Image 1: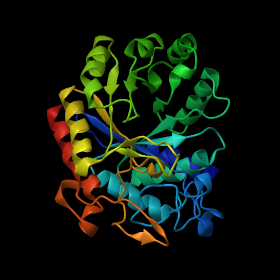
Image 2: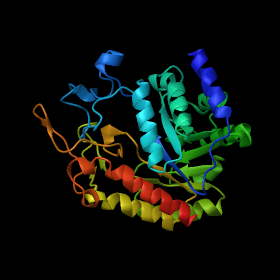
Image 3: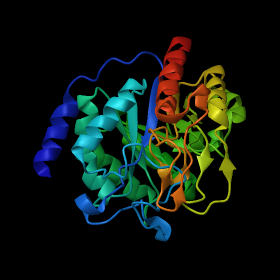
Length: 323
């Protein structure tokens, strides 16, 4: 692990590829495991599901159930992500010593090899405080990571965030997941993002970015293809994909709002059905059936598997041109 961390330091110390105006970032989940590689179907089996036929998702991955510790898989994912015009991964991170923490060095190496930058999505792990988050950022900064997205920051006192962000200074960039721009400003965050594509639709982006500009904060609204977590978390809410129209609508709104960057929810959050990673065509696995991307931009069957990656490339280019 120490040797791998050294490799990450060396990789991240190299000059990053020059980015056109308007960064595109995608939230990335490194928490999946398989019985063959990891001893258990981690996350695929949550809520009592029994893989490989019965999984905790309304969709089934086109590459099959995979392990996030498999470097061959990681390399393939990074090439997909880069091909979609995405510049940065915001990697879900659940505290020091977590599985996501252990996998971060390999993800950073794979990302660098594909020309991608790496940020960290700081999740609300048990016992998280502002002080512990500052320590986390310092540790992650030591291996070359400088951009941090803080999920649910308003669970903790704004006065403590203000002090912490003053201490962190300009060496790092810290964005708050909230639509309350005034609160983010009081907490001395560098910007805001929304993540939740159900609560925050494209209709809030113009207001969000106008307020962020007034406060001199970065505006990084989150776009997504839809939401369906009924099998993943038993959440009954569904935001239909509408054959790609949901994704298009959110991208148009982000561009119209003059966003500083666009964040995508998500590359591979299969539990919530927000993924743009290729999904298998409609089929049954044992006695279980899964949704697919059929109909998205007129595609069906195998041609639909990569529909959302291809559309992301289209919108990423449109966004950069608009900037």
